Image (cartoon, rainbow, N blue to C red):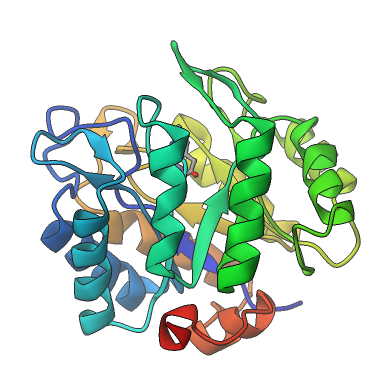
Length: 277
Ligand code: KMH
Ligand code: ZN
């Protein structure tokens, strides 16, 4: 079986330092977390930015600062979140790809997200997908429910995506599919041949379901975006500890952890769009 691509998601849009004082929220903290995650085995870092009040932001200056610091410290592949946060307008979110990260997320459908609304208007999604294609930014397709997969296949048919398609099967968001093995298997069965996929599980199921994803031959993500706890009642002391634990699970399953060059090959990444600027 191929190596396992581990993605670190250090911050996310929801938790604050009040929830876990170890949550990285400044560009400096996010870069340090990305470096530690790389050293623990992550080949991709999924980046959400926060403003000075820890609110999710699509501010390009803050994003650029974080990217610059990450790039100075390790070769980890940068994947900017275009999901950003529930209260950030899509028109602000989509501008983040102009910073030419190697990768960025593409959320194909709107949905309830906890008690909030996660808006991904069909025309905006198509505009963003087209721009990512123009820039050479690889989209990671975020799947929160089964209907999101055919929505992505429509984008492929419309010429807005290039294969291999890369999917995240995101389980455990309130408003999306529950975090169960059945749902993971069902979603993976719906993926097109040749697709690359990772398991993401929000909350308590994070370790179990990411380990199942690896055992199924998939890739996996962890970090404080997905769980601020190491185990019930124990806050995670760092993103590095979460990534190291997942890396240990990969090794225990007798799989290799993908290096950055292997990840570039697995994802079919083209040349770094930042170098083409
Ligand atoms: N922004 C959250 C609502 C992404 O990173 O693209 C969902 C999210 C998806 O985090
Ligand atoms: Zn995210």
